[in-house]
Length: 258
Image (tube, rainbow, N blue to C red):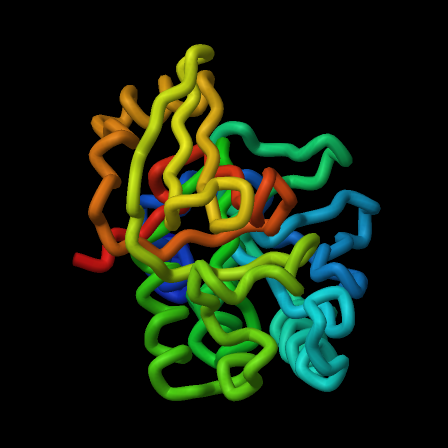
């Protein structure tokens, strides 16, 4: 009886971190991962040499964001405080690794603290979903919105303010959040879709969706042509395509604002 009482006590003690993780985060891929160091790009390196990538967010990187280094330093210090020397649970859904063999994870401490959520709530990260993943997008977007509304962390600096479609000229090569109304949604002969935010695609902002990604949209019940006339928030690295453009591969990368 004493053995079973002890076992139940241990289970009760360890249960909170397991129960706290939302279903969207997936199953534990690596449990009790001991973090030896945190790299400047936000990757967590374990004592056995394996690496964890915080999926779904982007931490600030200072001048590469056309922003002050001090904000990036604050984010790095917070992540170190949350992770270095600690044992964490890495949860993952498919595809679980990136091309550098880093495990793409939603990461939780043993007391149930969700690292991505903490960084977003403090304004020390932005949501940055990738085309092939989008788990927990609602929770991540909500946490970001809370910090943005309160002007916390990076949201207090104009460098990180969401852009309008007309403001993107100087932002080529940087990750930006853009808010605007889709003036026209056009399909090309290859099956791709362009969401144009102005009358002149050679100058105005565009969201591009490849033919393969259009199939992904439709598999998820979204026809990208239906974005026409809609007010949206979209994010990604701004690239030149006539005018500035962001490529999107997953409808979870687009927030409808109406």
